[in-house]
Image 1 (cartoon, rainbow, N blue to C red):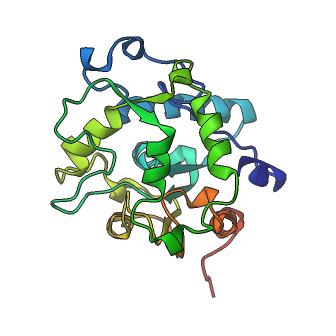
Image 2: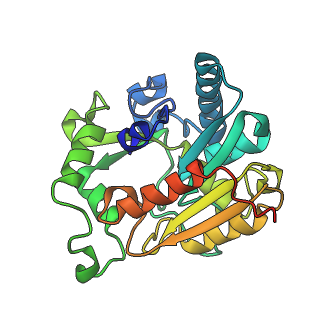
Length: 264
């Protein structure tokens, strides 16, 4: 996806917040998970993201950039934008995280176990979560051959301790979901976002269902303009699936358009 947008002329950056990807791991991740409370909350992610934005603005000598967030990243960039509209040109939220309906839970929640600093994720559990809720017919051919394996190998390779088979992931996001998004307490106010905003959601996303995207869309009351696109036959990870080009094109149309407002 980054290559595609770079080929179209954009300078493209992806931010790994602390505890993820190629960024440094907090010291709590070197200890047993249950020795510490959840780490790397949304506020930490917003801080890390903001530092990256400031560096990019300085590097390119510009005053604004386009920003995009997926899943938990949507709350990170959504909160950031609500506090820093002058630094954002356009905002894209894919599978946006918003308030859960009563009685529902995040599929990756800890159940009845105490929530430690981080959780350990196996490749098999990641694949099962990806295809959760799909019929065999829907799952057939959804992920192109070799894509899951390539994604999993690259992702697990970023964790120096994942050689044992499990990837460590900070639990701050789970803690925030349990204490805010599942408790009816939004972590930011979309009404404070004033920049053009695109929301994208896929039909088979059971992690963050369509009602969440629709909920945040209705709260975007002060954007210059906003758009909501629902893609068919896709899951929470549609950017890696057979219909990924629809996903990419919708974003590119939104970012490329120069004057979407009818003035006459």
